[in-house]
Length: 114
Image 1 (cartoon, rainbow, N blue to C red):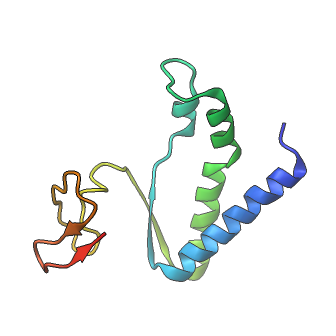
Image 2: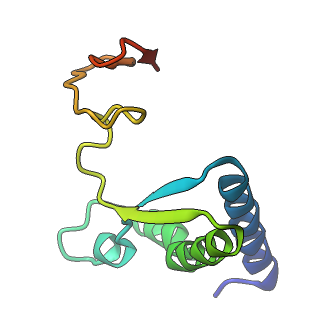
């Protein structure tokens, strides 16, 4: 069982992260995070301590809190799957095969980002 100070720390983390995101971005892409699927014992590759820590962060509560803060400030939260996120050039939307490279270069405008 979590103690009260742990709950307060998680709430503080949720508030600070949500504030940072809505202050700095107009559109927030939030990947789906299936904690219940990852924590099932059958065919699990995570250790029990890792699963316990992951479940204590309250990912769904954060998602709902972020959506609430975004609607209060006129920002948009979009739920996305993580497929192609590392291959997608964020500023143009094009898909580029980056292989093992740490930088991504747009074919449209030639900009490079790491």
